Length: 524
Image (cartoon, rainbow, N blue to C red; front, side):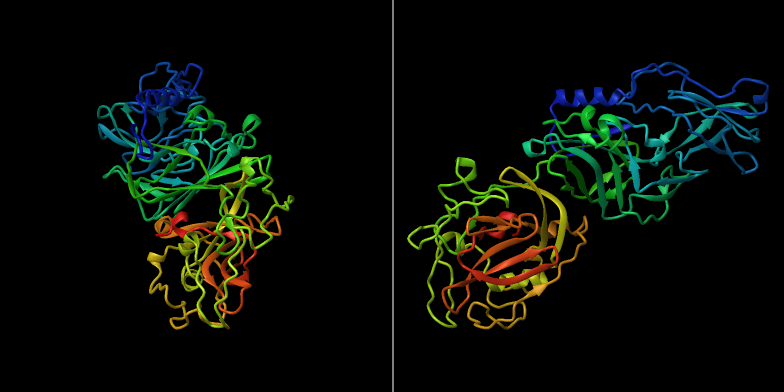
């Protein structure tokens, strides 16, 4: 087995050595060969296919990739009559070596191909399942049922009854080592890891004796590894660590080798908040070679939104300035709280811009911040041509609480014919239109593919403030534009998102909506 430090972060030498040592600790007991009914009279007509030398071992040699055989492992060999033969025996416990006994005729050659298709395979057919399960951290006991496989040349003498082989493993292995520096996620649990690819990573494949690789046209592009067991792991693997620690929550997934673009969704559950959602990492295209480990070390740090970007329309100062929740103020941080310290008079610099130049006259924002926001024409392009997709699972934090829910939009660079000067109908300038046809679209609930993920940006459902109350956080998001409605001093345009709606709307300027350029959220 070769190892590969996937370039998701840099390692210190000490950290790498620590990881090698921990991964090597696959068992605490001595491992000895155990066989079922070998070397008796019933074995005289069987051929022995041996792997390794019969010695005790307590560690996995990470540098050379020494594997262990597990109870229930069988090998398959074609005999001189081209008939598939399955070994008659299997180990009864973990062992570094084993003598497999195989029926059939093996008299005409000094070399035979040995196939190990995993516990769910037969002959040369291997299944890498789309659903994999690991019941405790830092364990590879599930490899056999998860698609681990290999092929080998067994060598001996013509007419002999004993052949030896060393398996060449054909799968690629992802070793996940998540941690979190976000205190909101501490004491949460990792419940599963979902890997989505731009091409097949799971299906039934053939162990090719000529090329020594997995062949076949697969179609499965998603694998979900469940990380739950019993006892301390009944809820999942703990996320108490602030740095990578394979003994705390190390998890391994088997995939088909190849060049893949991967989107990894870590599913995290908070028992306290009764919420389960995802933290997503997207990797650029990379070649995942057979018989290699790839270390996936990620900080599961959902994006945090600090609560300081709520404004009345075109106000000079934010809605809760002087009363911020993180500075000892009484800014409400949940929907069950309210405060009277919100802006209520037009002499307050937190109060909205009341300017109204006249019916049908364009009325743009005047503050530096609001000038940086998209105008109402631009919003129509996001809503109608930006392929809105609601993501009910992606986690984020705000004001010390964990939330989920938001919408993906195409970045403006990926919206054909995008314009600031007219709406998505190609004609109307909504900045001067007094009776506009509002632009509304129903979002998809299908996430962008792993290939297209970098074409989109994410807007969280940060809710809004009205009369000092925080409303609908996690369900809706309302984002101001730089455009007031050109009829009176009451309304300004905004983007309104919910699980069922993306809408260019207008609302009273007194509301505390998010005022933040979309570039802050990943648009370009």
